[in-house]
Structure formats: C-alpha cells, structure tokens
Length: 443
Image 1: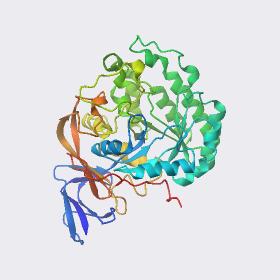
Image 2 (image 1 turned 90 degrees about the vertical axis):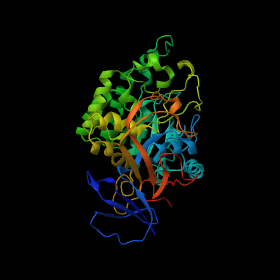
Image 3 (image 1 turned 60 degrees about the horizontal axis):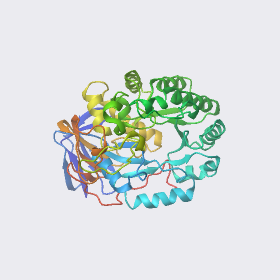
Image 4 (image 1 turned 90 degrees about the horizontal axis):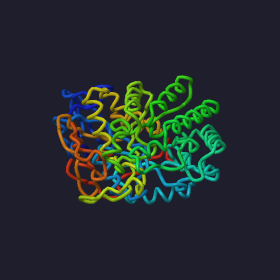
C-alpha cells in the first residue's frame, strides 16, 4: 500500500512541475508521475497538495536541541511546524566527544524526536576532546565543532590539532569563530550596543582567516558556523577560490536584523556572535546569491521556556541565543523569495540540498527523487500570516519576530512518508524521528 502526493507544484530537477509523488510503505519515494501517466500501485492515502508548492524537507544543520531550556521533543515539534524534516543537534561541551557519549545522546534523542536527527561531534575545547575523534567519525557524526571563546579559550595549538584531525579523518571541522584576544574584557551594559561592541567583527574575521589558512595548508574540510560579518564572507569566498574545502552557514537573524535592533529588542536579539551593521547584512545577502554561503541554519537556542506575557530579561541576565527553528524557512521564503532577493532554486539549495551535501547524506535527503526518503514540506505561497504562539511546543513568544507579518506558510511537513505537522498540530508521537548517520550506517 502506498501514499500519493497529488495536485501540487513539485520542486523537481530545478523547477516546479505538476507531478504526483508515490511513496512506498518504507517511506521512500517510489516514483514520480506526470498527469498522463498511470500509477501502478494501490493507494492507501492521498495527500492533496492543491494550491501548494511541494519542496524537499528542510535540513537544519545547527540547532541546540537538548541544551539550555530546550529538550528534544518540543524542539523537534517546533522544527516540524517550520518545515524542518531533519535537525543536527549541537551538543553541549564534551557530550559527544567520545563514542560512548554519542551513543548515550543518540539513545536519549531516539526516545523523543519527532523528526529525523543527526548528532554533531564535540564540542572541542581541549586536546582531550580530540582523542576519540576517529571513533566519533565512524559513529556517523556529520562534523565536529571547535568553540573558540571557551574558558580557557581555544589557542592556536588546539586549532591546528583540530584542523589536522579533520584532514586525517575526513570529518569536517565546524568552527565558532571568535578570537578571544579581540574581545573586550568588560561589556558596557548601559549602552544598548555594548554587547556588540565587546565582540567586534575583527574577532570573527581574524579567527576565520587563521583557520582557513591552516585548512588550506592541511587539506582539511572546514565549516564556518553562523557567519555574521561581511568581512568573514569575503574571506570565505577568497579561500574557496584558492581551493580550500570550506563551507559556511548563516542564520535568519543575521540576514533580517542588524545592531539597531538592540535598542528596541534588547535580550531577544542577543546571540554570539552578535548582530552586525546594515552593511554586513547586505554583504551576507550577496554571499548567499553568489553561493558563498552553503546553508541557512537556525542556531536554535532557548534560554527560557516561553510563557504568555513573559517579561524579557535584561541583557546582563540573558544567556545569548535565539530559538528560531520553527521560523527559519518561512522567514527566508518571505525575505528572500517573495522579496525577489533570491530565486526559489537558491532557497531550496540553502534549506535542503546544500546542507545535505555538507552533512554527507545527499544520497537520502535534500531532494525529491526516486529512492530518496520522502521528506517533504508543503508551502502555501499565497498565505499571509502573523507570527504568534503556535501551542505548547512553540518558541515564538521568545523571538524577535513575534508579530511579524509573513507571506508563505508551511501547511504540512512529511518525514519518510508520514505527516508530522498538518498545519494545525503535531501528528507523530515521541520517537518517530530516526538517527541518520553520515555516510554508511555505523556497525
């Protein structure tokens, strides 16, 4: 018995096409049929996509799902409501630096997640975090992460050792690029821009330049996380042209907000690295258009559980982070595709195909094609809606986008053939999500 997706405009081979998608009982795409073709299977369920565009499911390759106030179940419910069908969990320090740590994290996530998931390796903040990096690679982690502004901070010796580990194992090294020597020792909390000025662009750019030079010399694959500054994007473009294996990501908040938001939003827009200037924001959009940026991510982090009429903490009291996993796709669609800044093809590359390539799962995820997992997002391109509380799993009340009007809304999220989000609620139970390994499944 099979499921049929019909009557929608499906993103296929670089354009929207009026085709039907046949999904087998294993949750794979079994066939793609034009309107004049006969479908050879018995259909147990039909998903009517009339008036919708059907895109490959979103892949968020950077989200903190079991950290701060967030946990796997509500975090992945929020992801599903936003059209995300796979999330890469970014674990706390040391959690997944060993095979045993990865297995324990996987056990916890498998019991709770409603969408598919991967587990980032690391986070590396000390030499001992590299001791089992080969085992972490064999486990199926998509990358390991180095967090420079740790306490004590990551030094050049650990950076070089991490780059060499990436070269040796082939496991991509993701970098939180902030050189602590460039950070101010104190934040002027009386100044709305005090936090941003304490973490200047030069901290991100100089760290990126150092690691990219190391990566070029070592032949190592690296990934620059949450790019905030135009200068960083320019450096990445240079090193890509020089042959470095470097990929990069940015977030909706760096594309849609600038440092002027601190005066009005305060703690709601605190993140590391911080919001930058309007000029930086424009350069990031250009980097997206020029395919320098590989993926859009949420960098989802929840400092405090949302409550109705919740008071916003002061910046001094807030743990930096923006909980945007439920809005990344709609925000990019509205600000990018609807506004004409990017094409629908570039949108799909940023949310699906680009992340799948970086994560090493493009044989299963990131496209609508025969044999791939049937991970789909239905998007109503004509819907106008206002960002507001979506229920017990929603993080909208903590976000700087609350009350924004958007054009284009996720109406259905399908993971391996099963509808997880139907536009009104979560339909899958805890534990539906599967662990997905980079490359071949681990033994």
